[in-house]
Length: 239
Image (cartoon, rainbow, N blue to C red; front, side, top):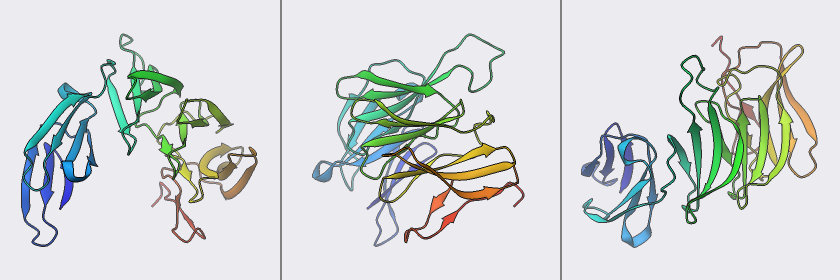
């Protein structure tokens, strides 16, 4: 069975027959799906009227096994939950300034789901958020509205490294950072005097290495590493 988020909930398909087994309707598309083993699948809602709640559904039938609330902290937007369910990333939005831009009142937070408390303030946020977990989920790389790259420990939220990314405040330009497959380096765009660079940040030493130098300034794609670790791909705004 494969579970697919859709515009109004979750659909389950049999991979042998291609037929839909069931559909769980919620009218909310901002959700995550996690396999709970023999118990079923867990659906966590990130935004909307069901934000902070979860449902566990039986495999194959979609019958509700249990439901609950994984956080009581009132935040406007939850945009990611760790695979083990221990942590969540939140984007807190402060309302009230009608002249503010989409990133002016936004703060990124790391939440301890079990204890239901904020572990760390990760920095001024951008939308869409672009925090990325390391392969072992022990560290988090996030591009803030500074713009700045920050690397934090996911256990306690402690800041490990930071790197200025230039002057541009465009939240889209450069996209999200990307972790190396070994979890030791973070690749990210930064603005330079003559254009844009993709740099590799060594998390342990803080050493920065320039990987790509591009004189064009309209970069709208996160760097992507190939599985064999030999190549790096990115997309330019001029197609």
